[in-house]
Image 1 (cartoon, rainbow, N blue to C red):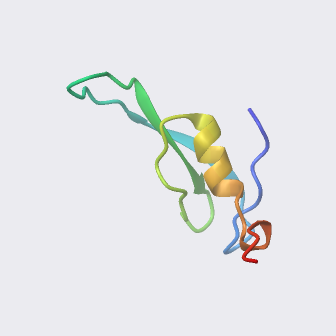
Image 2: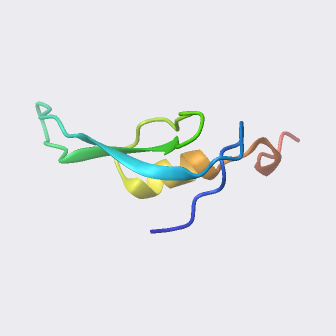
Image 3: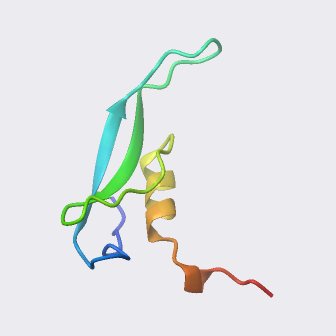
Length: 67
């Protein structure tokens, strides 16, 4: 798995977490993923894939161009 940046709030180590999937009318998702800081418990948004959870966690304000 790709590397996770440290927690933006406390600098703690972040780890991937998963939640069990749910059956929706048109498809079944086996699991959902998110990233959580082991020190302060800050979390990313819940995502459909581990890669999407990583992208959400690793995104920082300085990465966004507001021009």
